[in-house]
Each structure stands twice: as structure tokens, then as C-alpha cells.
Image (cartoon, rainbow, N blue to C red):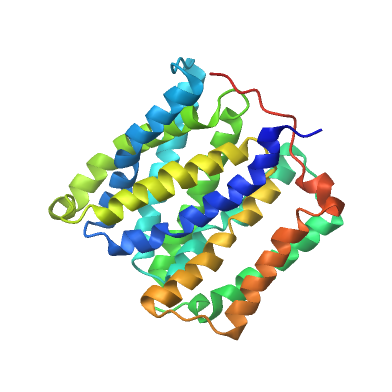
Amino acid sequence: MSSPAHRLAFPALLLGNVALAFGPVMVRLSDVAPVASAFWRLALAFLPILIIARLSAGPLRLPRRVLGLGALAGFAFAADLGVWHLGILRTSLANAALLSNAASFLLPVWGIVALGHRPTRPALAAIALALTGTLLLVGQSAELSPRHLAGDLFCLLAALLYTAYLILVDRLRGSVSAFPILVLATGFGAAALLPVALATAPDAFWPRDWTPLLLLALGSQVIGQGLIVFAVGHLRPLVVGLAFLTQPVIAAGIGAARFGEVPGPVELAGALLVLVALVLVRLPAGKGSASPPAEPRSTP
């Protein structure tokens, strides 16, 4: 019988991805440099995350191993955010969310190779549908053009870094609850980004308008990453990975409404296939693939 935490994991995962999908538009609306916006996302979120961690888990007494892995997770996440924010300004919103979420397919591969998870036929069908939908959703933006190529490459690199971050989080979730992990990743990540932001664009470090950055910090980091880190401890990589593809679907809608990046029939069909894949991977027939491992041991 599944625990209450496990029953909440999948809705939390979807909600976290919805919150994260609004991140690219906040980066575009901010008046600071890309790496600076990545720093402010973490710096402004650190205190709220620390307060939540103290209220939910008590005093943070963490062993050296956890601190070490947390630092690595923070550095991977900082690098991911830095290159992703550079990519966001050089490609479409849909591409920024889509290509950076290549982790959707890298995570299941890691689960199969490293963890020995064997996907069932419905799970393999879900992967095939998600891949097809992803290729359709990219649409014309997939062309290697000077307008999108640099941004697309930045976003693909971000996907590799984000996969490394999630693997480290998954290792930590075996012994540490969600928000203490996020405290470490956010704090170490902000410390890593600060000197880079100051060195690369010192004149575009301090914002004149704090609103986009506050929304980015609260929406993407506190709510989005908080829910994602919680869900990672209860769901297998296949489910977590495919759920990331809800971000480009939502981002495409945001891009259409805010920036005139209107998706055509092919892109809409791709979005529908992604949603069908997400439903398929959660059906009882796919339970062997999508069910979580043993319940993680959360400590204060």
C-alpha cells in the first residue's frame, strides 16, 4: 500500500513542472544579465527555502558526505542555470524548455543502465510517443539556423548538467528529506554563480525592477524545484523524466500569448502526443516501469 507521500508525488511533480515552465519568461523580462538572473533566482530563494527546511525538518545537522554531495549538486545546478539562461535569450521559449529538458530521456537511460530498471511495453510506448511528440513540438525551431543554433546548444548542455544534478539529488533523497537538499543546492549554487555574474557583466548585475526576479525565485526555485526534489524521492526516473516534457508544452503556450511564438498544427500534435505519453506511463499496465523504488528514508 502506497504512503500518503508517494500518492502526492506525481501531482507534486506535475505542479512543479508547471511552475518551472514560467521561468524562461521571467528571465526574458528581467533587466539583468543571464548569469546574474540565475544568481538572483538562487540568492532570493535561499532564505525562504531555509525557513521551510527548518520548519519541516528541524535543525540541519548533516554529515560530511551529504554536504559534499550537496555541494556537487549545487555546482551542477549553478552551471545548468547559467548556460540555460544564456540559451533562453538566444532561442524560442518552447525550445529553451524543450531542449534543456532532454533530461526527459537521459534520466530513463540512467535508470535502465545504472539502476537496472526494466521498462515494460507500455513504458517503452510512452517513451516512443514522447520522443515523437518532442520532435514535432520543436517544429521549425529545430533547424540549425544562426538565429537559434547557439541558444539550442546552450540548452542541450544545460540538459546534461541538470541530469547530473537530479542524479545527485536522487542519491541524497535516500537519507535526506527534500528541503534540506534544496538548501544545500541553492546555497552552493548561488555561491558558485556570484563571482561569474560579477565578472561577466558587472554593469548588468543589479536589477532596477525586482518583480521578475522575485517571481523567478519563488516560482521556479522555491515552488518548482521544491516539488521536483520531493517527487524525485518517490518516483522512478522514467516518470520524472517524461513529466519534464510538460514544460515545453506550457512554454509554447506562454510564448504564443506573450511573444507571438504561435505553434502550428504540427507542434500542437506533438504537444498532444507528449500528454498521451504522460498518461500512458502512469497507467496500471505500466506499473512495473513507473512504480517507485522502496520508500526513501527521510531524516530530519
